[in-house]
Length: 92
Image (cartoon, rainbow, N blue to C red):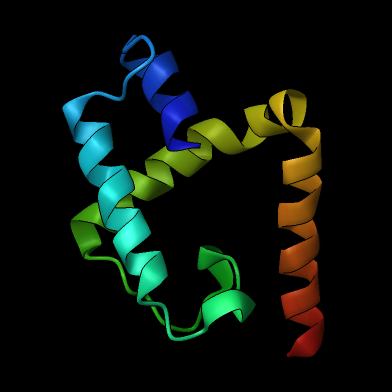
């Protein structure tokens, strides 16, 4: 989603711009240290907010832009994402 956002908004070509590279690296670090591991819910449903406020605002902007377009570009990934969210909601 970050790559799609960067290419669309920042006209960055094949590589991510510096701002989006920093955001991607931060997101990957947070995912690696997530206490939920493979059972991690989607970020919007997670009881623990592990992002700093500034980074959370940036990632929300990326998600708001990319999520609706993902259904057209990557339908399988989109369906998998919503399935995970649904599964987590049922477990609660």
